[in-house]
Amino acid sequence: MEEFHKVRRLPPYVFEEVNRKKAAARARGVDIIDLGMGNPDLPTPSFVVDKMCEVIRDPRTHRYSASKGIAGLRKAQAGYYARRFGVKLNPDTEIVATLGSKEGFANMAQAITAPGDVVLCPNPTYPIHAFGFLMTGGTIRSIPARPDEEFLRAVDRAVRHSIPKPIAIILNYPSNPTAYEADLDFYREIVAFAKKHEIILLSDLAYAEIYFDGSPPPSVLQVEGAMDVAVEFTSMSKTFSMPGWRVGFAVGNQRLIAALARVKSYLDYGAFTPIQVAAAAAINAGDDIVRDARDIYRHRRDVLVESFGRSGWDVPPPSSTMFAWVPIPERYRDMGSLEFSKLLIEKADVAVAPGIGFGEHGDDFVRIALVENEHRIRQAARNIRRFLASEENAGQKVSAAGA
Ligand SMILES: Cc1ncc(COP(=O)(O)O)c(C=O)c1O
Image (cartoon, rainbow, N blue to C red; front, side, top):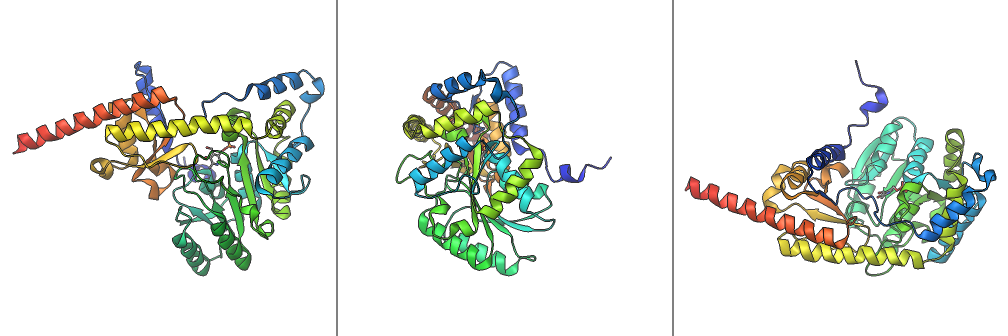
């Protein structure tokens, strides 16, 4: 029987293949060190959990909540944007709370896309950036992931040559998976371009608070006039170690926010009210609680770079996000990222995310997530060292035998 139209646009997640291999190894009793999925392992701050427990006892909170988020949560998010970016937002018309930023992004795509609309999407990128649009009948044109002159040339070329003209450009800095960062000068250029060509900007700022060196990542909405064309998505998942709670936000241009709110009003009643109250408490608590998580990720980053480097596999240090984007060692590059990732599970008991899962231009890389503690990261490095050494010996034996 022929596959459903929509399902045909959603090939099986590449990561599933690695996950199956991982599950099979674990079933055999192997201790796999899992640096694959970006699933934060740190506990949610305890006062947030306490707030949730307190509020859940009030039966009034058990009813349907508000689809676009309770007023207190939207107000808290307005406070964050004012404090952190100096951006003033109207909580009623410029902010929607979402069921995680992934849901917000996908439903924004659904709200604004007509069949055949072209969207400019970085490659490699976090899968929902492309599949959110593919699911709704849109078409993707790939652009480079690195926010530089080549990126600007590529969007210019795309606007001149795509038919129909692109409706939107996706931005994601700091980026998953590459950890590339954008500065305000870049945002100024892209906002001016978007305004000139009447193109929407969708900025995914999920890693706004996970940064280690240099200055904090900016928001595209800091650029004057950005509110005319841009919406930005943020997430509680990484910032407050709340991935399972499913709270995120879309903020910015009123027309776009109204379109998202309209779609959501047909689909959901918002997150459970106690979750929203606890999320508001987390945001209002200020920046100290974020600092602890940031310090842990920074330390893990340092351990990863140092221990893997000593094992013979150089890891370029990311200065933000919870990921390292690592070139596959030269001698394995031809096999591609999926086969290499499977080999690492088999021979080194280490799971990573194959770069191909983020797009064809990611195939020379794997993504390593900082979601295991430093001891486990060091153990992974020792396993890798053993794996690389044994492969080298095997290679020498082969060439000696062939000589
Ligand atoms: C760039 C990016 N955007 C969005 C998300 C999804 O976040 P949320 O848990 O808020 O849906 C992730 C999660 O890994 C991400 O890396």
